[in-house]
Length: 324
Ligand SMILES: Nc1ncnc2c1ncn2[C@@H]1O[C@H](COP(=O)(O)OP(=O)(O)OP(=O)(O)O)[C@@H](O)[C@H]1O
Ligand SMILES: [Mg+2]
Image (cartoon, rainbow, N blue to C red):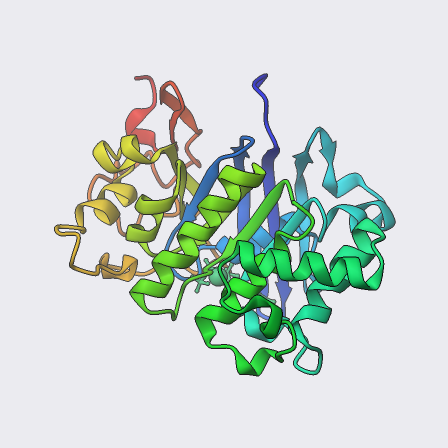
């Protein structure tokens, strides 16, 4: 792919080596993120979304291991970088926010000091300059009374407010890529909308690309430019959001998206019949085979389908579309 890409993940596989056997959690997933885009990763619980984000951040710990693949970021393969070089990228060019960020904040340190520390480390600013910047960044993310709030400790913030502080912190060094894993789960709808708006605003102002992981299809529709649908460690479809919601191709994506009849009705991905297959002994071919209404016996169980580009930028991994 010759176009300008920020992140290019190719055939990434991550296993967990458990007492019970080898868990093949990510099986050769590939996707690309362009500069300034919000790219969503959706799929039901256990499909491997978090493992994918942790793999990009090189945070997979034993018994887990990335076994193959490439993760090119700004033209450099992150998996080949020495640890020291990689630590210069993580936290500066690539930052992350997780669900319940408050746990990632130091409970014993004032918020202002925590943000100021980032400016001091990354930009070499003096103590007072860094604090100025910390206040500025809280204001940028609409924390009221920022001058006063820098003196507060994390527990003094509501969950939604703590999440905003976290975004302010993660945006402090103008990252190229923000990985947000379920950043709004557990928040009320209004706070959720505010957080998503803030992230989009950060994209518009700073030009940060966002990898948004969510199991909420409403959030994905509202926020993402493009979307990858994950099922049991495979990415089964990738397309622009409007294309995917308008014309899903993969039987799993169809089931997923046809199950959103009305905007006001919350539909969970887990409403799809059947279960995600065990990743300890996954089917050899398509991993959706046991749940698929369109299964072609004699074909689907034999080999993993190839990812095919059906229309420009619309990819699907399903035997139904082979030769079309
Ligand atoms: N440290 C670990 N040790 C063993 N298995 C793990 C570990 N981390 C993840 N897994 C397994 O990998 C699979 C994918 O997990 P992952 O957390 O990526 O799912 P997810 O798509 O993020 O789900 P959710 O929506 O619930 O967050 C699961 O079957 C999980 O049990
Ligand atoms: Mg997860």
